[in-house]
Image 1: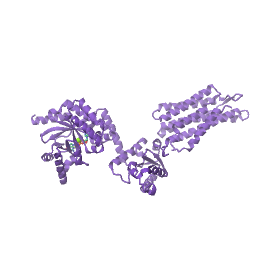
Image 2: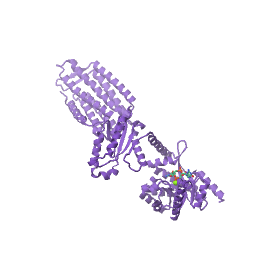
Image 3: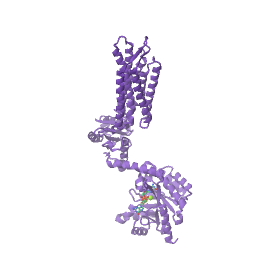
Image 4: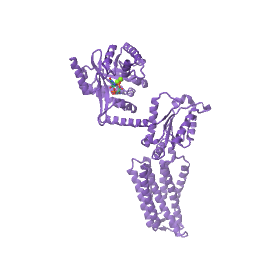
Length: 639
Ligand code: C2E
Ligand code: MG
Ligand code: MG
């Protein structure tokens, strides 16, 4: 009896099954589909063996029984092929309706195929020595047709839906199908080699090794479900009707480290154990610092969030001496995000903005995601897209706001201010897009574009002829911390032949705090080249006189708020007076920004402020209007 290949396949599947059964699984749809295919393949190979045995004992067994076993084996072949197709479709059709429709149609084909197999006649051939055993006839042909259609459809999907299909799944399924076809051809031409069943087992093994080994969903160190399992799981539950809630716990060990010392690992084992015991929640390890709990019910989620709060407050380790402060973000419903793949970025976004808002670490760090936060994230994404498009389509412009010198009694400089137009040509305020560009790093490119445009403007329009000594250009915090800033800016000035005395770069105080060394290196390099610096936004938030002492700036710009406060608040007057005397004492010049009325202008002039900038003289103007403005001023002065 020639059943050794089938037996090998059977043993192989049994061994795999033993492994598979014991492994921790997450109940993904693909896992379930694989489970079905696995069972079908095992039943198929068992029936294959049984049919050969039955054929070998055909003389002593009732004929109807032999034929029934053979036909049932053929039906099981169809079912395995159908399982392969279903397995692929799970990845392709994330919308339930599409998936169900395809599966229904294919299932109908399988049922019709099975009915034909049982209805049509089948014949068999058994050689005397039992080496060549096979079935033939209409029933066998019907099986070939249905199986071939299903295999072709599966291969077709793996090619046509390439983008939707997980690349590993695609190639694993393709290998399986191809091995099957080759085995069928071998068996067709050499009837002594019954390898189709074995090929099916090899196919299952390939799927297992490449994709369905549940170990691949686990984090090696903690044994928890890992990031890729979390992403697959979110994708799966997003379409369901239930309201799933997510709680992310971010462990900032750098803050707790001094407490933790040597015991960090032990504590984290305790924490993991505690979290994984929480009922009705699945625990995932998203990264080294972050764990995520998914609840299938909002009420249970809220209860657990409260329970966690008190558990974490009561401490860990020996004598509960170590108190951890995980930063917790709670998303009450995953469908607040617009798609499954936005859920985790949304949690991250909320964590970042919450952290920015409260610098001090507080024990009850729990933030519930609300609609405004979600809106803000999508708005920022829109702005990001807008910036990218504006850069690509050259919709970035520079406006110039003239700056008046109280000593020379005319306009001697201007501030370059970036403007971006949306696709309809409407101006977008820098207040909206600068912070977004800073966040995602696009500010480096944007800053360079602005600087290049300023250099082009100076080269082409020569504003010096109208008495402009220099143009002030804003530098963002992120640019100041960029190692190649000085190098890039010097290159641009050289490219346009711009004497460095025509450029004054504005830095802000926050820039120096976050990356002081890089900023100072950049400043040194540019100052050696001949560029000067101003300190912008003085009088907002964190102004610090020491800072002026430290920074090699020539000009200090009083912010609009500070200027306004001077007129509205008696005490602020003294602060500004004192600051002004100190700054002048250091031989630095002062620009007052945001001057809107003649009274404000006169007061500042009398105070001895060196430069005045504000709507009183002009709003920021596009290049040509700015030149016209300067020209008119020169005419007025009779120059
Ligand atoms: P800033 O550097 O302090 O610029 C001064 C802002 O005050 C400008 O707003 C200007 O239009 C506005 N302003 C000037 N005079 C008056 C006034 O009399 N009344 C009022 N209400 N406002 C006045 P803008 O152009 O919207 O820029 C806002 C901020 O965006 C700038 O503040 C600067 O921090 C940033 N920014 C603008 N252009 C750039 C750029 O090219 N690069 C970088 N990194 N930041 C820029
Ligand atoms: Mg400025
Ligand atoms: Mg300013």
